[in-house]
Length: 297
Image 1 (cartoon, rainbow, N blue to C red):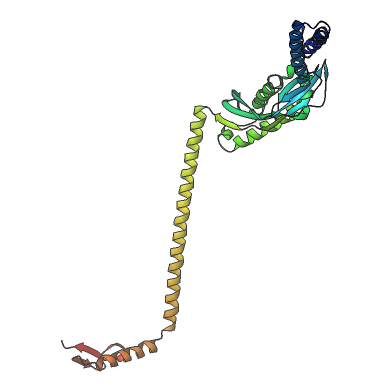
Image 2 (image 1 turned 90 degrees about the horizontal axis):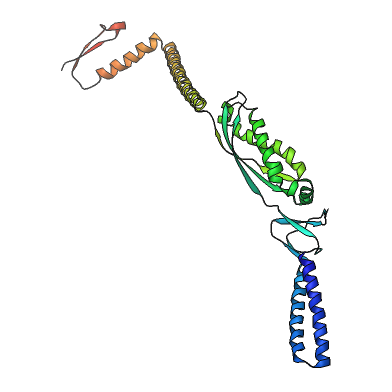
């Protein structure tokens, strides 16, 4: 291991420096002085390298799992500089959100083939990183656990939906059900599924055309129902208006007596007779005994 190698070199260089310094003092040979300088430089350099092996840098959005000769520490290392056993191996795991994209052909409830384009947004639980490293070969949880389960659940959940239902509002429920079922399985392995958005659902062409024709027929039917309702309302309005006019006429007719009409006729005749226009008045010859007035022009 690098730590042991640098430690041995730095110790060896240190002894060489001590030996050279002793000979410089005893023999006063300048050659030993240069040797002591080189040995001191090498000892110092490799000592720094050795000390650096006791620290490890964990990038942002990652955690570290410490493996000391097969013994895995349950405590993960957070992002930043951490002090570790220089003989231990540190495995870094990303805990950032990742996207898994899948394009697959699945079957609907009635056996129709549907093209499904779907994504899974997921991340590794930081506290589960050590367990993932211990229980999943190489810690490759994506290839071993997530991807196979995601594909299997997509097929199983889609098979419970009618293809025609996926043309409209059921798409959202399909994505929600896939996320729910996937989370049930992979959460126990330390994987958090944030969402499973559907990018596209490709239905068979014949089914799509049939659905669109039905939608157009439904829209036309709704339009005709609206027109008929509007015409019925207009007919009701006119009938009510006519009934009101008829009722008004009945009320007015009931309040006009023969005596009132005769009196109004007398008043009108009196006004005409008193006007300045030239006229001939025939008294007693009109209907109901009213005079007849003839214009002489």
